[in-house]
Amino acid sequence: MNNLIKHKKIINKFKFILFTPLLVYLGERSLIAYDEGYYALQARWILDKGNWIAPLWFDKVVLDRTIGIQFLIALSQKIFGENYFAVFLPITFASIVMLYLTYLIHKELLDHKFAIVSSLILVTTFLWINYANMATQDILFSLVITFGVFSSIKAYKSKKGIYYFFCGVWIGLGFMFKTYLTCVPLLAIAPFLIQKKIIRNKLFWIGCFIGFLPFIIWSSSILKAYGFETYSGLFEKVLILSENNVFTKPFYYYFWNLPLNIFPWTFLLIPGLISSFRLKESISKYFLFFYPLTVIFILSLFSTKTPYYPLQILSLFSINIYLGIISISQTKNRINFIIKFLNFKLIPLLLFFSIILINLDFIELNLSNFQTKLVSIALFTFSLSWISFNFLKSKKAKIISILLAPYILFIFIFQSGLITDRTKDLRLASENLVRKENLEERYIATIKSDIKDDLSHSKIIKILLQMPSIGDGIQSLDDLEKNEYAWSTISKDRLKERNDISLINKDDIFNPWKLVLKN
Image 1 (cartoon, rainbow, N blue to C red):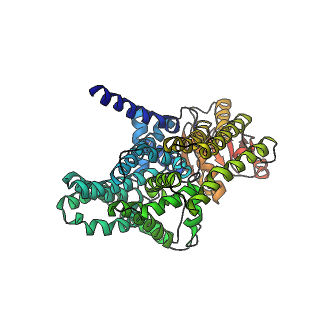
Image 2: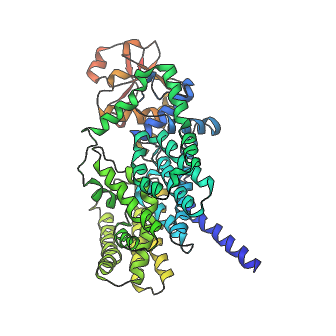
Image 3: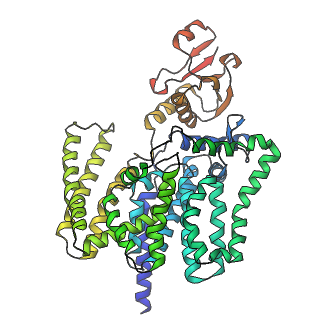
C-alpha cells in the first residue's frame, strides 16, 4: 500500500515536468514596445540611477502607472545580474504559480481526477502563453486575481482564518499592479464575499490592509519626494482610459477578440460553459459561469479595451474547456456534434491545406526556413492528433489526443523563438553594431526632441534595450560633447550640412533612428 502511494506521488511530480518545455526558454530573447520594452527600460533606469520609487523616462518622472513590475524586474536583475533571464524571472515564477492555482481550483470546484488537464489547457492557450513570455505586469496581475478566487473558495469551504486573510490581501496587491482595474474582479466577486459573509470576518479586513501596505508606502514616498502634482498622474491616466482613446473599442469587442485569442480552445469553451451552468453545486456554478462572464461584461462597459484584460479569467475558462472536452466525449446532442465537426474534422483539414500553401510559398509567414519547417511539422502533428479523436474510444485516450495537438504546437512556437525572440533582426543588427564600433563601454545619448510619433517612440525603446549602456536624454545634437554618440532622427540632407556630426550606422532596420558621433 505504501509503495502504491509513493508510486502515485512520483507520477504526480512527473506530470508537472510536462510544463517545462513551455515555460523554460534558454535561447536568445528580445523585447517589443510599448509596455514590455517600456517596463524593462524603467527597470534599467532604477538600477542605473538608484531611484526605486519613481518610474522614469530618462531623467523625468512619468507617473502614469505604479512601479510594481519595474521594481520586481530591477530587484531580480540586482540579484541575478542584468540579463534577460533575470528580466523574465518574476513573470516565469508568476506563470508557474498561476498554473498550480488552476490545478488547485479545478480540484476544489470539480474533483481530483484530471485536474492537471485544466493547467495544460491554460499553458496551451495562445493569449496566456504569449503574455507569460512578456515582461509586463499582466500575468502577475492575473495571478493575484486567480489567488483571490482560490482563497475565496477555500475560505468558504474550509472556514480557516488564513484563507479569510488571503481573501483581503489580493485586493491591495492587485491595486499595486493595475490600480483601478482591480475594481473589475472585485465587483464580480463581491456578491459571493457578501453572501457567504466572508467580509464579516476581521481577518479579511486585516488582510486587505496588509495587501494595501506596498501601495500606501509607495504613495507616501512619492508624495514626500515629488508632491501631489506628480502623484496625480495616476488619476489622470484613469480619466484618459475612461474617455475615447486609441484603445477605445465597441461593446462587443471581447465577444470576438477573446475567442480568437484563446485558440485552439475556442469552440470547446461553448459546451464547457453550458456544462458549468448545469452544475448542481452553487459555488462551482458561480465561479465557472457567473463570475467570469460578469468580468467580461464589466470589462465591456469600459471605453478602453485590450486583448490582455481577460487574462484574469483564463484559469476559470480553462476549467470550463475541460468540461467541454468531457461533454463532447460523453454527451451526444446537436451542439456537441457541431463542435466535434468543427474541431476535429474541419480545423485539421484547413491546417493540412495551410501546410501545403505555406510550403508552396502561397502563404508568406516572414519566418526563416528553419522556423517555417518547425511550424509546418507542428501544424501537421496538430492536425493528425485532432483527427485521431474521431477514431478513439476511451475518454482518457480522447483527452490525450486533444491535449497533445496544442501541446506540441506551442512547444514548437515557444522553443523556435517566435514569442520569445520577438525583434530578432533588430537584436542581431544591434549586436553587430556594438561589436563593430566597440560600444560595450560607451554611453549613447538620445535626442528626446526627436521622439515625435509612435514609430520613433516604439523603435527607440527597442533600440535602447539592445544597448550595453544607456546614456542621457538630451534636447539636441548641439548638447553633445566631442566624441560622444547619440541616437537621432536627423535627415541625411541635414547631416551633410553639419561637418561636426558623422553617421555611424547604415542599417535601415534602425529607421527612423541613426547613430551619430560628434567629431
